[in-house]
Length: 150
Image 1 (cartoon, one colour):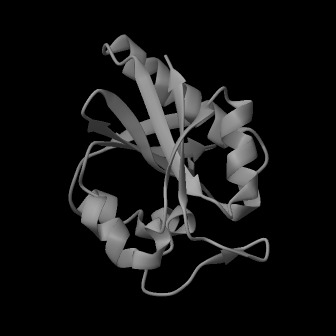
Image 2 (cartoon, one colour):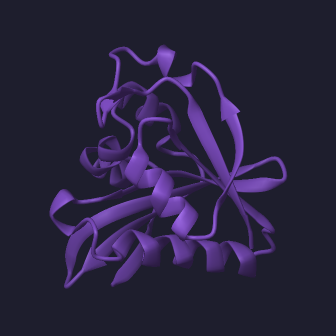
């Protein structure tokens, strides 16, 4: 597995199809696509996913992490997350946060297995989305934030 940093601009726009796997509202994704650092994840010289981190006041946020559907569940996301945690730690970061919908049961389990703990809830976060999002028969309404000390 290799990760390549993607510069802001047209190169990131080419990853939009992956980014919307994790954040379904394309306009919202376009609003943050050029922020922070983004890495394209490659396996055997083929695009396997993307991960983006954004600097916030006092912490870094994993803003988007998406793995192509056929490669999900193979540990790629876990390795990519560890990669950005390590480079962030090396650059002096002490805290990483990530948000996911209340309906994203697999994501909630994924982050907890990776050592993240429930940090906060933003109620009604997903009511700003153009179309309602349903996962696992549950409507995405609230954003659950998880954090991990690096």
